[in-house]
Image: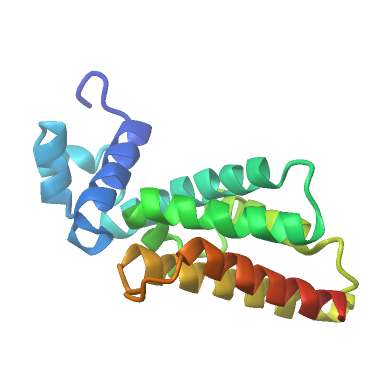
Length: 187
């Protein structure tokens, strides 16, 4: 019988917290069980193993990131929306490095509708950030990949302490948002 108070959501939230503390690759069922005060086999009543746990952490992270992006973009368009999306993604990646790492490469299958829906919400938010630009519908995927790659790359390098120059990182984000804005505007 599962331990009272322990359910799938509690297990996934604890794994996500642990990933933020020790890094996603170091989250093991054993370490998670220790954190929750149970034996590792008890976790298998709530998740189907390490891969299932990683997918569920990714789903949680994408859900949280999608909500953060949605909130940041509320009432914004054009350059303001791009900047809001860039800063929201940076804040999320800095506050939740382990969770964010789970969103990058997810081994999902077609039956994981929760993960797909959470990922779609993130893409919908990024699409909303570029909706005001005159983008040929045939180029939409390319634009979304560019914006996601740019914001993601900056956030990951920043979170890892990879920017050693003393130039203000916020100013760098504003610079590349201006650059993308000009490019998408055709100016």
